[in-house]
Length: 251
Image (cartoon, rainbow, N blue to C red; front, side, top):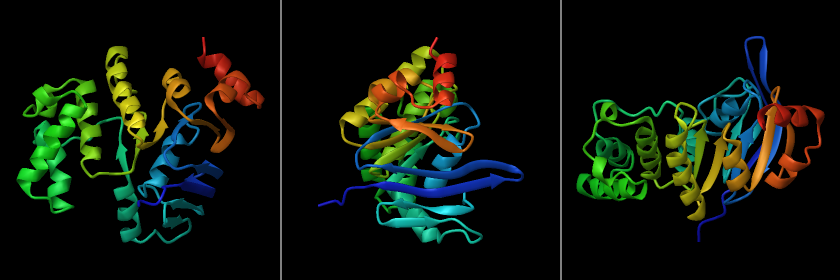
């Protein structure tokens, strides 16, 4: 039986030059939860997500992802540890990062073939199944330039799922989309949540966060200033900074 996947973050700090982006972050994400990281721009949300994935090395603290631990300091973590974490959590970016020379199905096949050693025919069949799962079975042979922003993002989600992760890290994946396309992509995330996939989502879509997240963390100035279930955080924030943030955005 697969061991439950928990993420624990203790005292994580990160500085870029003179700017303290993360300042002692502590939080715990329980197995199977959908967690939304929200708050003002520049609060450290995306940097924290990149630290969990091993894309950004942090200065202090530690991050435990299942059985694997990343430690801050002058030495970067072992590449093997980072790769194991990336097998557990796929990451999806706001700018899609699809290979422009590959079709939709080709983008999804690439990692299973070259990283997992999956035979090409098997990888293609799985890729087609994933395209159907995100509602794009008819766009398998389309190149990224032939896809809308929402379609590109759904291909990116399918590509992450092709590695059979146990969770997804989503970094503002609807920020470049118009409202109708945002709805398409958020609908896919809600289906994945219903399937039991763990989701850690950096988002400005507060309606999605309120409706779909099990727990909300509000970040500002590199710190967690508010946390709890959606109804508590949105209806009864405990800090003045969080109350001011919600007054500004919930209009």
